Amino acid sequence: MIFYFSGTGNSRWIAEQIAKRIGDKTYDIAKSSTIPEINNEKQIGLIFPIYAWGAPEPMIKFAEKLKKTDAFTFGICTCGAEAGNALKKFSKIYNLDSSYSIIMPSNYIIGEDIEKENIISKKIETARKDLEIISNEIMQRKKVYRVNEGNLSTLKSTVINKAFNKFARTTKPFYVDKEKCNGCGICAKNCPTSTITLVDGKPIWNEKCYQCLRCINYCPQIAIQYGKATEKRGRYTIEKYLQDKNTL
Ligand SMILES: Cc1cc2nc3c(=O)[nH]c(=O)nc-3n(C[C@H](O)[C@H](O)[C@H](O)COP(=O)(O)O)c2cc1C
Ligand code: SF4
Ligand code: SF4
Image 1 (cartoon, rainbow, N blue to C red):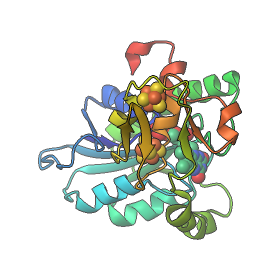
Image 2: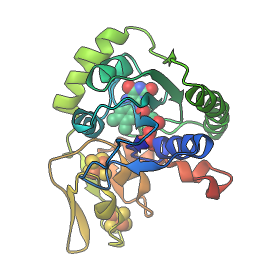
Image 3: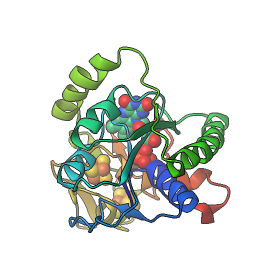
């Protein structure tokens, strides 16, 4: 069974693609609070995006509760560039036989604009090749550690990651352009922390936030902003860039 968490679809796509290749099923950990029975699973995969050189809180919490079995275990993180020591740290919570990073387009639009079309396409093309290799290695039960840690990985995955979780995950800068918002409710329905509610047809944000950036990236009206900087930036979701939408 392949468990995944995903804000803007990269990790979901990777999970679906691996599942298709190795003949397994996927499970979105944000959609259910119950943990399925895994006694008879041949392999356990955990797939998630990198947030500030670490694993997202919901995936860590999930892994802490997940039963340890004799199954082969693998972790795959998706990241814009580098993962730091995220998977080494994660493996202490849930032991991983294999660990991988796959470079995908960055969805971090509150920090920088989306990448150019040709860079996004190239990343997805390279990821498709990675998927073939990784799937074969999983099927062969090869124990692999292939993670693009980047430099200063220890510092980034400890001090900076801690600061991110403590200070950066604030919803305060979120606001909605009331003229553009049509009250469709997609942001509230999709938020994995259920922190968004519609009041008079417009979203308001409570406190709890994973900073997955699903709300701001998926709003069909581009009505959500995070401070001033995002007003001039693009939005990222993997669906925009997959040529064959059925592959999702
Ligand atoms: C809050 C936040 C922090 C991020 N930090 C990193 C990072 O430390 N290193 C990196 O390479 N990419 C980083 N990214 C980019 C994402 O890891 C990357 O785009 C990922 O593939 C998104 O996956 P998803 O579409 O499944 O949510 C960050 C994105 C967000 C939203
Ligand atoms: S997704 Fe966008 S348009 Fe829809 S309710 Fe939320 S802010 Fe408004
Ligand atoms: S408020 Fe937005 S960024 Fe925060 S958890 Fe919900 S969807 Fe993700």
